Length: 149
Picture 1 (cartoon, rainbow, N blue to C red):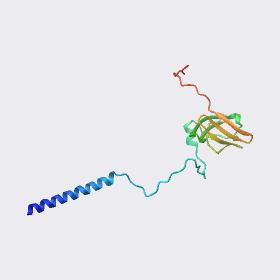
Picture 2: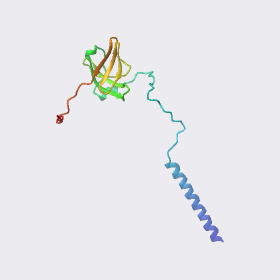
Picture 3: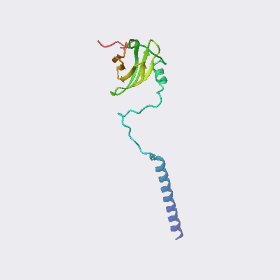
Picture 4: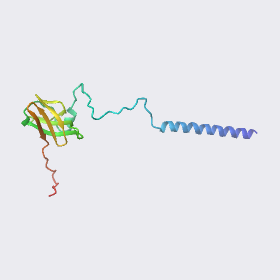
């Protein structure tokens, strides 16, 4: 009887250890649930900005810095980051030959001129006498690449 009692205890302890190890392996390998509920943010809603956007790092990506004021004929579109087909995004504008500065949709570019929309190849500026569309300039292909004719 002593042998069967000892073997039963060994079996019971082995099962307890296996159950405990299995429990902890499952605890450490399972994805962690958060206590905060997940809330979907509608993409069509615009969040009001209370502080201005620091666009200096973005302008640095395009080799630009800050700038100032001028007329529509002296504004050159350097680059765009458009948000899908919604007209939202950031445009890099060079004004009066100065280094380019980044502007978000709705920001004042110069005087009464504001950035109305940003699209893949052009932007629209809203000024007192109407809308002005500025397109990205055509770029030549890199050296060694011949366009197909």
